[in-house]
Image 1 (cartoon, rainbow, N blue to C red):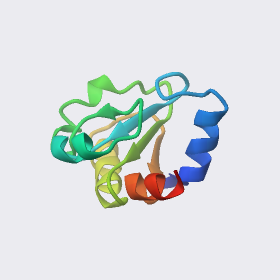
Image 2 (spheres, rainbow, N blue to C red; image 1 turned 180 degrees about the vertical axis):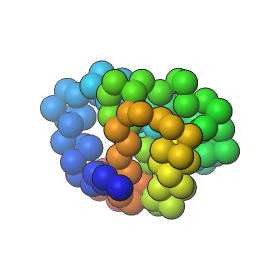
Image 3 (cartoon, one colour; image 1 turned 60 degrees about the vertical axis):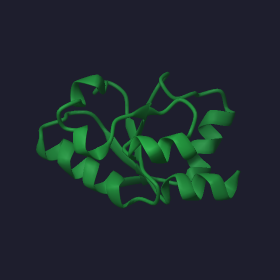
Image 4 (cartoon, one colour; image 1 turned 90 degrees about the vertical axis):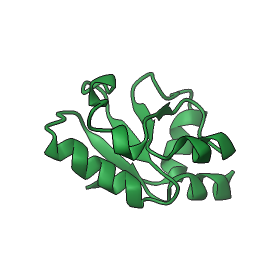
Length: 103
């Protein structure tokens, strides 16, 4: 499974490469978690809905998947791969917690 650090993602954002341009940033946390803190530009699809809503993902660009700490994002990637999603899937190591610690 491919992984990206929050520092690598932050470098892309600071270089002007915002989510939705050349990649999708997918947040698989629950709505109450997203309401508390989120990474700007994320597409929000809870883990429980990720397979049924995978049509919202563009397989033509990488999808960087994150959650609070990395466990659910790995589960989401496995579920999407098992369901036949053809795009590149990348796990954001450490999730939102790591993102907020580096801010």
